Structure formats: structure tokens, C-alpha cells
Length: 284
Image (cartoon, rainbow, N blue to C red; front, side, top):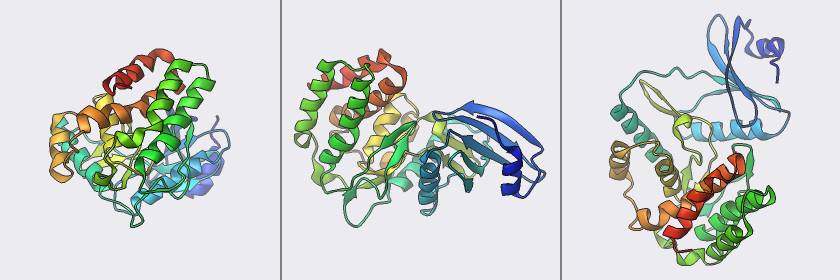
């Protein structure tokens, strides 16, 4: 999608002296813009509500004092944000920063013990339904995360009927797998891979959120899936939020199921082996 430089200049109330292609996102191209006084990032897409949803999520996170890009302007076809200048930092310092930021995000809860969110959010190009569920995390995870994404994969022809049935069977008795009395709803990022955490001298900055209130160990399981961070991160994080007793044996494979399904929906059956591995670890 081409940039409307004139319209964006009016929004910024400054001449845009340079625009540079940055990367291709899941829903459109991303550019950097330079004016005489600042740099910005603009995400583009075909007209849809998705960029407005992303803007809402960023603003919601920011209100809790968690570092994210500031939203400058949003429309159905663009999201204009402040540019985050990254610093050269060592791996250990970056992991410590990430652990501190994520632990702070996970400390945010809600008084009603509700899982989900006040509006539907997105992960990549997909909508995340967030019908709020009180107390019953297993029900929310099964009905709002695993099965909707499994059906998307099945309908696209990239998930076999046999795997769909295994997932349905697992989800029907998911409450027997999770000790829900030990879980408090936490605000989670929802899509925490290495590309969605930026680092400045002041700390970690979160981008591209897929937020909702859930088990905070969902984020940790996804971090483990692609080794986004190492033991320094986990050691620092555990000092604030100790892991549940069944984190490695149950939570990691269980919560990675959703992310393998997202990747299967995006990239095809190449990720089915990871999904099967999770089911095997759970004996499902």
C-alpha cells in the first residue's frame, strides 16, 4: 500500500523529508518517516479495524506505565507511532530489562478475576475473541484460544482431522489439567517473540501486543518455544513471579499449542510436528 505523504504531513503538522520502507508486517507494510524534528513509524494495511485495535492495546498498556511506542494517529489504513531508537546492549542486560518489564506487565490484574478483555484483540492477522470468563481460565483458554485457531487451521486445510479431534478431546477436559486456584488473571502481551521487544538505555519497550487477561505463564511458554530469552531472563523473572510447580511439565506444552496453531495457520503444516510434540508431552 502506498503512503499518503501529504495526509501524514498534515497529521504531524510538519513536512516529511524522508520516508523509508522498514519491513512487511502481517497486515501491511511498515515505514519510517523523518521530519525536521523527529522520526516516526507508520504501519499500513487495507482499511480495517485492526490498526485501531492495535492503537487501543498500546494505549491500554501505556496507562499502566509500561513502555510502548506512543500512538500519534490512527485510521483504518494507518497507525502512526513514535520511533523507538534501540541501543547496543549486552545480552545479559537486555534479558534483565525484558524480565523486569514483563514481570511488571504480569503484575497488572483485575478485581473481577476475569479472563479475556473488554474488547476483541488481534494476533498477527487473526482476531482473538475475548469473551470474558470469570474464574474459569481453562474454559477461556480452550474456547477462546485453542479451538477457534484449530478450526481456522482445519478450514484452511493445514490441520488434519485426527489432530483436530485430539485437540477437541484435550479441551473438553482441560480443567483437569490446570490447577486454576493457583492462577490469578494477569495482563499478558500475548505475542512475545524477539521482534516484539525493543531495547533502549531506559529499558525494554513492547510492540505489537495481543493483550488479554490470562495465565502469565502463557507469555513464558511462548518465550521458551523459540528461545527468545535465556536463563538470565528466567532467573530474573522468577525473583518477582515464581513459576508454578507444573510449569515445565504441563504449562509449557499446553500453552505452546496455541502458538503452534497460529504458526500453522500462517505458514502451513511445517509447524505440525511441534504441535504433535506438545500433545505427546501431555499424553493427549
